[in-house]
Amino acid sequence: MAEKIDQYLGTGRRKTSVARVYLRPGKGKMIINALDWKRYFADRVNLENLMRAPMKETQTTTKYDVIVNVKGGGPVGQAGAIRHGISRALLRANPALRPALKKAGFLTRDPREKERRKYGLRKARKRSQFSKR
Figure: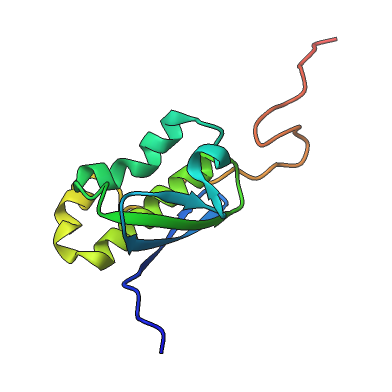
């Protein structure tokens, strides 16, 4: 019989990105869509800081390995979705971390979405240049 692995799931969302985050006891490795995070995000350190912020806030950086499946959106939206998912998974792993995560604002889903395009305009708000004559 296979041994049971302690694993905590958290789903994070940002813009059109959705991330399923699995936390497993480990040494702090982060794998995104079967790639190391450095290969996936091409060494963009600012995105690593964004993603690892919940773990740094709760001092659990070297306590868990993070396995992520993420789709939709661009790199920054995906990193935001991963951060949200990590926060939710940490909450499942240890409910005592809730005050720290809540105070830092990591449990709140960012509600901002892309505004729809309106007819008669080129983009959501961009108009063609006005000319009197």
